[in-house]
Image 1 (cartoon, rainbow, N blue to C red):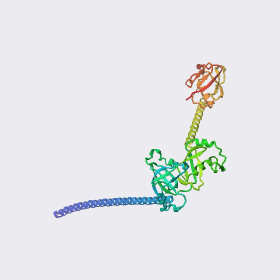
Image 2: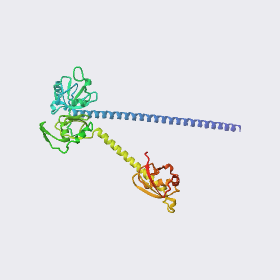
Image 3: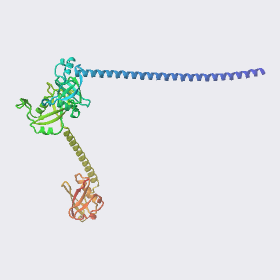
Length: 423
């Protein structure tokens, strides 16, 4: 019996040990599973981060490729543009400005260049292209225009410019004249090809041009022979503009064109050109439009603004009248009937000359009179007084709560006038 007890006790101890071992094993397995789960989760995050960074790198590389392609396309387009502009002739020189003061060149836009420029243009094939030579002139001060060439007779390192080109560049003045003669202004001269002009929009510098041209006979547009000048000319505005552009070989947006007619001189600015912002006029039939001067545009805009303000004010007044009339009609009591001894017939003269009248009880307030005026009149005046002529009495809206008896309107018939109050 003692042996059996001992064996049973040993069995219980073994079972406890096994349970502890199983529990420990279970905990260890659970810990390993959690660690494995954490490891996989960490690996997944690392993989996602790697994928994200690779995606970012691919997107950056794609953007760089697109930027490179875009820049290449822009460079190619600029090259094509420059080729169309220059025909592949790369001629860019900087010269010192010298003004050509001869009278016959005063309205011309053709310059003189040194003989070395002709040699360079021949060497680069510009002369082989045929046709007139054109140049883009720019200054570091921001001046820009175009010109033709008159002769290759200027001193080396100089460019002879007529007054029209001088005015368009805007930087060549007596203030920068040098001791040696000429001007310190440097003009970059670039060979270009220009398309034929299709249309030009000119704007007078001031209103005097429009005033003067409106005094001319614009109905005549057929050519007439001018014996003093020995050639056919077009009369009126068409002829004036034709003559002004006749001596020019190019036009550039921003240029100033001088128009001379009957010893009167006017300046017109080039606002728009078609098909490009610089065109040639040689052997070209160009359409010319005149836009109002800036002063006229300002006047028209001011007039339009005035009309808009006036329309808004009228609309506001109409709303005031409508609201006041609606409010007054809702308050106005019916015209009284009955004992004439308790009533007064009041005639009202309105500012627009209209006359209205009705009976009021003398025991009623002046508010009825104001409501009657507002309900029956259409004059646009937010504030007004009512007054009698003789003896003169003035009744303001502040007195609306007082009765007719209290203010002295007690005669069988009364005449009052409406006097607007300036706001």
